[in-house]
Length: 264
Ligand SMILES: O=P(O)(O)OC[C@@H](O)[C@@H](O)c1c[nH]c2ccccc12
Image 1 (cartoon, rainbow, N blue to C red):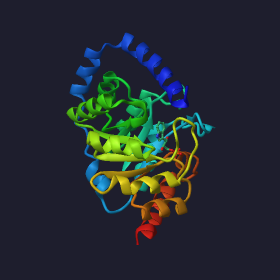
Image 2: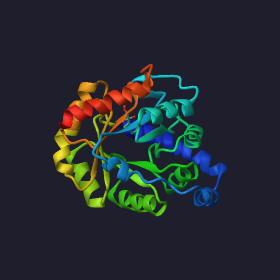
Image 3: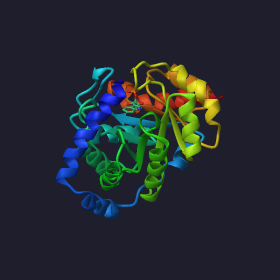
Image 4: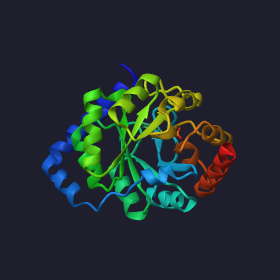
């Protein structure tokens, strides 16, 4: 059993508990009456690097990262620093996230918000929308082609955008064939949790320029950002470096400046 399998087993149990409390029909109704989702693709296509800033308390690889008593406050400083979007982890068992965090962040900022979780069931998409998400994460390694396609359709039917996460050449091909518009390369292998910042550079050319390219995970320094920008990243997804930084808004500006050096 890989780490990913193990995480998903827990996600499935938590999902059963929520569906027992709130039936799909109710979540669907809440999704339909939620305020319209925001568009993210134009922000990601902006020539300047887009920084997707993550609210992340802990992770299976690093354990405890930050307390984050007030996720809305953190998100507000991300937005003030120029974040293009805010990612909110909602997985409970391994990342200590919650849907309440998504609600709090959504209520506070007017930039697009990503529900970051392991999406394995239709229910979670209506739930994401009901809680104000504009984007969801689809992890190719966790989905067969049929689910990848049907979840992409459901995401766009709900007016949201999918960040389709890959880690290998085969996964990039599957993402492209399924019609993904925004493709992430996770520098962390979710089966082993090993991080290799070179993963993005190795796959960027394969993605090409039809899809938006997002470099994810293990991005700690301005030098990392400069390199990824020079390799064609349109956006970066950063958690640890921001939640551990005393001044996350300054860190975001610093990353954006580093990207300018990378593309010059
Ligand atoms: O904290 P980092 O190394 O900056 O990583 C952020 C983000 O990329 C990471 O949280 C992540 C990327 N893909 C995921 C899938 C599930 C859970 C978490 C993730």
